[in-house]
Structures are given as structure tokens and as C-alpha cells.
Amino acid sequence: MVRRVAVVGAGSSGLACIKICVDEGLEPVCFESSDDIGGLWNFRETPEPERTSIYRSLVVNTSKEMMCFSDFPMPADYPNFMHNSQLLQYLRLYAEHFDLLRYINFQTTVRSVLQRPDFSLSGQWEVVTINKNGQEERHIFDAVLVCSGHYTHPTLPFKICIPPGWEYKDADAFTGKRVVVVGIGNSGGDIAVEISRSAEKTFLSTRQGAWVMGRMSTNGVPLDIAVIKRINNVLFQLLPKTLVNWVAERALNNKYDHRLYGLKPKHRLMERKPIINDDLPGRILQGAIVMKHNLEGFKDSRVVFEDGTVEENIDAVVFCTGYIGKFPFLPSTLSEGPYEEVTLYKRVFPPSLHPPTLAVMGLFQAKGPIMPTVEMQARWAVKVFLGQSRLPPKEKMLDVIESERRRNMQSYPCPRQAVLQVDYIPYLDFMAGEVGVQPKLLRLFLRDPALWAKVFFGPCTPYQYRLSGPGNWSGARQAIFTQWERVAQPFRTREIPENTSKFGLCSPLMLTFTGTVIIVVLFSKDKIVPTLEAVTEMLNKSTVFLRELWFSLPQNPDM
Ligand SMILES: Cc1cc2nc3c(=O)[nH]c(=O)nc-3n(C[C@H](O)[C@H](O)[C@H](O)COP(=O)(O)OP(=O)(O)OC[C@H]3O[C@@H](n4cnc5c(N)ncnc54)[C@H](O)[C@@H]3O)c2cc1C
Ligand SMILES: NC(=O)c1ccc[n+]([C@@H]2O[C@H](COP(=O)([O-])OP(=O)(O)OC[C@H]3O[C@@H](n4cnc5c(N)ncnc54)[C@H](OP(=O)(O)O)[C@@H]3O)[C@@H](O)[C@H]2O)c1
Image (cartoon, rainbow, N blue to C red; front, side, top):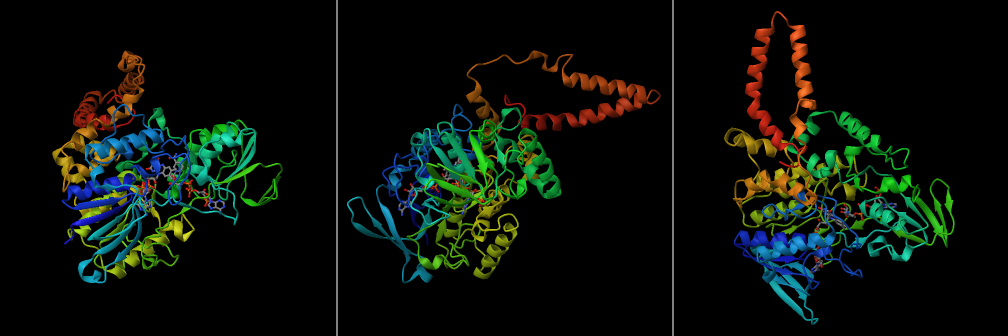
């Protein structure tokens, strides 16, 4: 019987895990090696070993309505894409609201997590910690939630002693310098842009290139809120992928041609996570960033690229070549994958553990926000710990892991990368199904069509997973109906009266309607009455449905 749960780390994942354990009547004990909550969002001036390091200017690339926890919307006045300090503020509000701090042991590092000798019967773990006085302590737990982050160990393409981008804090040291940034992930893009504002010249070297999208969609609505929708998910599955890629790439290239800008990758747009950067194309346009092929090597101040070009007088090379997830405190037997990675069924459970009393949080990549996904992982993990949700047999889990890896390798040729990828809505829905909280679309359509329209046509915000089932939240429906209000709120710093001519005589809507009537009259003179009757009847029937649809569309942030 699971009662005491160890939570390793008090970043956003650890906080969500503590809260969910408490919700389920469990006793969480969280160990956090630093002196505060927030994990990577708690900016530090100097990088610390085995902790994720961020740069001072970091702004989130997922918007507030999409990335909040499912029963705790972000304050309405928060900007849609906030600075890292404001996300930390949100995490503080969350911890305070749900009274989570009392479960956390700060300045306590988990050194090892080992199965007890009677593990096969008890499922228990021995957790060894070192406290701030350097004293070792041993604790027994019924289950463990690993929330220690996985952007802690930078990968470098060369055996060198140049500090990686991981250590980058700001561009002060690069003023007037000639700098090469290697790697075009979100870190490489952000850091190159920032350095380029004070450096003499910034070169951005990439192996494969990348699709680059801004944070904004049509009408300035946050990109993720405009795209991550159930309706789009259905369309992506139904329509030929080539067509979807062609349309989306065309739209993006209409803004800046990725080939012309030296960005174009080998893969298609929908195959991989694009990088999110509002400024990179502009900096290329201004000549402040120069795109280059992959780095072949460097000696002293001379840098050679794979196409044979050479840049002289380079003062600094900043490697933003990604991370490898490491969990030094876990039993090495859990790193049992063919590529020595921690093998996880549905990115949560090591398949060899029986009983399944350890779960790893956040070790995945998705084209969507991480925080609500981890929250759902925690809800599922706790149900499994309690025996209320069951895992398949080990062989079946291993099969699923390998088949998902093979499928993902069509887009991500690196097997270690491939295994990390999940499809955002299907992944959330899978776990929600296990927990019993997946939105029941047919039932919603019949009982609450207005809500159904928002859930199906609107953004797939985390509140959808609190509408019904275990852990449902009475505020979820209201949170969905007011989500656009919170998107619009931070813009209301200079209120402008609404354009009253929107539905006036010269509005596009009125012109379209008038044009349609004229065409109908011209082409069906003798059938005018029955035609108009049919049209009226159809319009009447559609009115209710259209009204609901209209309220779920992002084009009207005032809704
Ligand atoms: C630069 C950057 C930007 C990102 N931007 C976004 C974004 O905009 N949107 C988004 O959805 N996701 C983003 N992410 C992904 C991000 O990783 C997750 O959103 C999430 O916040 C990670 O939280 P975490 O708690 O899992 O890990 P972390 O925030 O890394 O926290 C881990 C905690 O565990 C502690 N810890 C580690 N080891 C031990 C130990 N042995 N004992 C005790 N404590 C330990 C650490 O001190 C730390 O406090 C970004 C990631 C990076 C690197
Ligand atoms: N603003 C934000 O919110 C923000 C900012 C930064 C980071 N993040 C997040 O933080 C996480 C880590 O991002 P990241 O950019 O640090 O890492 P990343 O996403 O793993 O990107 C690493 C980049 O380095 C390249 N690379 C890897 N190995 C290389 C090699 N040997 N030689 C040349 N290039 C190599 C990769 O290129 P290939 O594609 O060619 O392999 C990739 O473009 C991501 O989840 C990201 O979304 C968010």
C-alpha cells in the first residue's frame, strides 16, 4: 500500500507532483538540492553543477493559457509570453495557494535511490540524501517521483574546454567580438540574437537548419493557442501529411523564405518541433547574424565550416548543442535501453520495475507546453502507484517503446532523440484516459454544446482535463469560457473603443451578404421564393451552432 512518496526536485514538476500526491491522500516528501523552488526558472547568476542553467533574458515560448497548471490559471494581467522571473512568480503563487512549501526539504540532495531487498513484495525504496550540513540520511519510501530535470548535462560535439552555452548568462562578454554560435535549437537561436546586438559579427552554425516560427499567429494571437486544438489534431490525422506540410511551409516562407535566409532544414515543417524565435529572421535580414554550415573544426581564432568556408579572427565559440538527460542517483539497471538511456513506458515508467513504484517526470519532448503535460504524468503515476490504473506486462511495454521509437525515427534519425518525442494532444489524452479524466466529447456535445464547441474548436488548454472524473475542478468550465479574456487582458493598457462599423453597411460581412443575395436573385429568378425559404431554414438551423463556433474562435480576443 503506497503512502509515503519521495519527490526529487522542487522545480515546476516537483511542485505539481507534491500537489497531486496531497490531492490523492498521499504523504509527499520533497528533496530539493538548492535553497528555493522553481528549478530552472529560478535564475542564478552563476551556473551550478547538475542544475539547469538559463540566461537572464529568457522569455517562455509557450503561452500562459497553454502552459499553466490545469486547476490554477495564470493571473489575467500576466503577459502571454512572460519573462522567466514572472514564471517563477507564478510557481510561487501555486506553491502558496496549495500550501506546498511545507513538504519540501531544501538544501538536501538525493544521492541514491535504491530498491529495498524486499522490493518485489513491498515496492519500497531507500533514498539516501545529503543535507546542508553534509550529513547523510536514509529514508524509506513506498514510491518515488523523479523531478530532477534533464537539461543538466550539455552535449558537446568536440572534446574541448570551451564553456558551453549552458553557462551563458548574457551578452556582456561579447561586445565588439566576432562570435560563432553552434546549434540552432531554441537556445542557439535566442543566444545568437542576443549576442548579435552587441557583437561585431555573429555567425550561427547549424548541422541541419531549422524551421523558425515567431510566438505570434494571425491577429497577434499566441501561436500555440491558435494551433494546439482538437479540430487541428483531427485534421492533421485525416489530411495527407505532404499537403499539410506544403501549406504550412508556404505560409511560413511567405514571411521569410527559409532557403533564402539559409535556414531551410532537410526535414519537413510538421516532422519536428520548429524553433520559436521572433527576432532571428530580422537579425539575418539586417546582416547581424550570418548563417553558416556545420562547424568542422577550429584552431586558435580560425574556424572552418563543413562547406570549406573559413572565418578568421573569431573571439568566441558558444556551443548550444543540447543536453543529455542523466539521473546519477538512479539504479544503473534502469538505463537498460539499447542506447543506454533510461527506458520508459509512455515516457514515465521503467518497464522492468515490478511493482511500478517509480516514475520519471518531464523526460520527453513535445510540440506543446511541458508543465501541464508533467502534471498529467503525475496524475497518472499516482493512480498507478495506488493500483487504480494498471500497466501492461513488461514485454508489451518494451514493444510499445520500440515501435514508438521506430515511428519517431522517420522524423528524428537519432534514436535517443526519437524515443523522447510525444504527440501533444494524443499523449495527454492517453494519460487522461488512464486517469479517467479525458473530455467526453460526445457527452459534452449533447449536454453542453457551448462547452463542446470551445473544447473541440478552441485551444486545448489544460482546464479540459479538470472538467470531469477524479480530481475534477469546479472552476474548469468557467476557466475555459474566460480563457480569451485572460489572453486579452494584458493588452488592455490603452483601451480603444470598438469599431462600431464592424457590422455596418460597408463591413465585409454585410458586403458578402448583399453580394450573395444579388447572385441568388439573378440566378434563380423563377425559383426565388423556394430558394429563399430553403436558405432561411438552413440559416435558422445553423444559428445556434454558428454562435457557439464564433465564441470559440481566436479571431476575437474580446470574447
Ligand atoms: C532554457 C529553457 C527554456 C524552456 N522554456 C520552456 C517554455 O517556454 N515552455 C515549456 O513548456 N517548457 C520550457 N522548457 C522546458 C522545462 O524544462 C520545463 O518546462 C520545466 O519547467 C522543467 O521543470 P522540472 O521541474 O522538470 O526541472 P527543473 O526546472 O530543472 O527542476 C529540477 C529541480 O530538481 C533539483 N534537483 C536536481 N537533482 C537533484 C537531486 N539529486 N536532489 C535534489 N534535488 C535535485 C534541481 O535543483 C531543480 O530545482 C524550457 C527548458 C529550458 C532548458
Ligand atoms: N525561449 C524558450 O522558451 C527556450 C529557450 C531555450 C531553450 N528552450 C528549451 O530548452 C530545451 C533545450 O533547448 P536547446 O536549444 O538548448 O537544445 P536542443 O533543442 O537539443 O537543440 C540543440 C541544437 O544543437 C544542434 N546540435 C546537436 N548536436 C550537434 C553537433 N554535434 N553539432 C552541431 N550541432 C549540434 C542540434 O541540431 P540538429 O537539429 O542538427 O541535431 C540542435 O539544433 C528545449 O526544450 C527548448 O525548447 C526554450
